[in-house]
Image 1: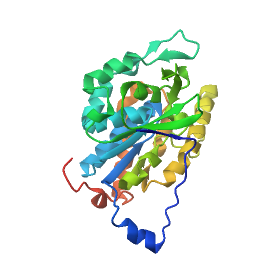
Image 2 (image 1 turned 180 degrees about the horizontal axis):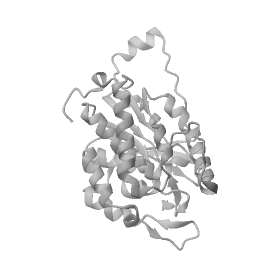
Image 3 (image 1 turned 180 degrees about the vertical axis):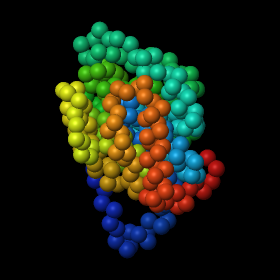
Image 4 (image 1 turned 30 degrees about the vertical axis):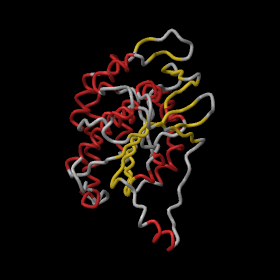
Length: 289
């Protein structure tokens, strides 16, 4: 299944009494869903988020994600635990999955990533995943976002990670696809109607920042602010948003700091649980998954 989104749409939650009564017989299939944002290396924080949730009995059963959030999300949907995902991504380093590209469309290519995916997912198809997974990517030709949840998996997942200008686009059926974060960096609306409670895990905190480390730091801050704007409407439709301020301490390419980034996501989520900002008893899985 695929559908296109020209831009994130804000969903207004107010309902009439009649709608509330009528909707009681149409309850979402899933108790808890989770949406994982893009963020390149910062996306490792999603592993820490999932670890903290699992330790408190919260195990989302429907997932959406884009870019690095899609990588973590697809492994989670394939049945790997947060610890298992960490082990895989420590083994399959950024340098292993990339190669220099002579194309004018990007400096690097992600073709080696398919070899890594084949090790951990039995077949190149969404249908082999143990939990439903909704993948966000950007269609350059039609200038829109797309969500995919069925059919071939690997090439579209790679496309979702292809940051424009850094990685060459992935051409599928004559369409140039790039990083899903370009159009929608937090594809929460893809699963909003499929779960009772929706958790958004956003790893590109855009709060106040005092210092910038030269032109590179200014460029990264500008990119971060840009992609955050397309995520804001999606943040608003989440029931709970995990958005660690300490993610500002990491760059998009801090792949060597995977341990620190995971710990940052974990620590922040634990703090939210302790403060009651994540009501884990309400979110705990009602059946074993």
